[in-house]
Structure formats: C-alpha cells, structure tokens
Length: 335
Image (cartoon, rainbow, N blue to C red):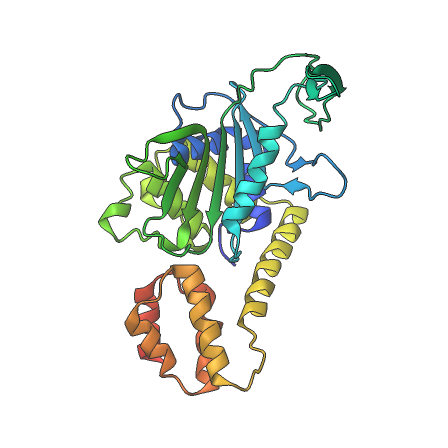
C-alpha cells in the first residue's frame, strides 16, 4: 500500500481540501491556481448543495464551494473520469452562486399594458431560493452588482485542444481586439495529464507546478520530496494525506473511494466484445489519452501492432502504474 493517499479520489480530495481544519491549505491552492487580485486572505466553506428555483430542476452539488471575506465564490470540482460536457457542467454550476446573490425578499416591478395607452405599475414578489449563509434582505431595489464567481475543474484527463496544464478563461468579445467583456466570472481547468515535471515549463521552482506535482503523484510518493521539505503548507498537506494518520473508519472510506475509481476504470476498459483485440486496443488508447493527453504517434502505432489479447490485458493490468509516456515506451519494449 502507498504511504500517502491519492488526493484526487473523492474521499481524498474532500478530506484534504474540504475540512475546516485545512482551510489554509485550500486557500493556498486557490491563490496559487487563480492568482486573484487581491489575494484571498480569509476563506469559509459554504453548503456544496445548491437548490434550484423549482423542484423539477436539477440541484447543483460541488466538491467544494467556498466564499472569501469579500463575498466572492469559489466552486471547485475534481473529475477523474472523462465527461463529454464538462464545460457545460461548469457553466451550469456557475449559475447557482450567481443567482443566489439576489437579495432575499426582493420585489420586482412588472409593466403590463392595459387597454389604455399608458402603463400600470404592478408589484409582484420575486421567487428566490436559499443560501443558508446569507441574511434575509428586504429590498425594493437592486442594482445587480455581483461578486465574482470562480469555477475550477481539476481533471484527470486532457480536454481536446489543450496545450497547457492550467488554462484560465473569462468572457471576452468575439471580435478583435477581443477585449475583456466581464471579469467576475472565470473558468479555470487544471488538466493533470498534461503536467510533466521533466519539462522546463513545469519546473518545480514554481509553486503552481509544486501543486500540480502533488495532486498528480501524491499516491506515488514513498517519502516527502525534498522540494516540499521547508514548506509548511505542503508539510501539512502530506501529513493529512499520510495513511498512517487515518482512523480505521477513514481507511475504510478511502478504500471504498479507491475501489470506485478502479471500478470506473474497469468499466471503461471492458469492450462490448471481449474477444475482439480491436475493441481492447481502442479502449486502451482511450484510457491513456484520458490519463496522459494526446497519444504520441509511436505509442499509437506500437499499441495497434499488438495482436495478442493476453498481451493487451497485461498492458491494461499495469495501467495504474504508468504515469508518463516514457515509462509506457519502456514497458511496451519489455513485454
């Protein structure tokens, strides 16, 4: 068993970043990934379950929902398995922390045309839904000023067209000069499969890359790497991730979470026809693309050249241990 937990599992992520005792760790991660101006100096957790306006709409359940001292919201999702519409999901989820900022009890005024030429002002009650943290505010006017909403998706796979491990997007005009249209809604993707500490752009001299390295490889470490030794935040993160510090119940919950991850992997690797080598090859290429990004041509050719089902199963059995293309290249040569 590994010394440290995989912090990208559902249990691991919420234990490390969703616990009030580790709010300083969570704040450091957000400040590093988002680089908000001004930086976050105080952070609190909000209810991660957000209710829609009516019962026939979907609820929003996030891995983390935080709020800083200025009232800005931070929505964080950890998603290891590929979702076809992850961007749509981020946009949909962002609507909840936006809509909830409307003052409770707000009255709106609607104009309805009568038979006469002039209009009659009619007062109606605004339907609102709750955010338990906000005090009820009675108002008849609201200028629609909003606090910022940041949506962060930490992904175990690469999105189509991505070239960097961390991408940040705001609403910009679609015509040159593409100036910023709105700066209070930001979408950030952290694609761990694109991170490679051997590349110069991902040098561990930078704090962001230290976080990416930790998130991607926490379960692979047998000791705390030297680059983290003198950093109090990471020292705490490693202490929280060390399995020896878990209670028996926490160990059980973690193992269940790991099993769910492996079951998802197993389901993805099962072809409709287990007897067809072609089906297994496509499954295998898809899995490596989700984990490591775009498949290099030489890897694609090498895997497609395998015509033995048992050999393919052997490669699949080592899938969880392969975290970069060079390791896979060497492994394909050895078997």
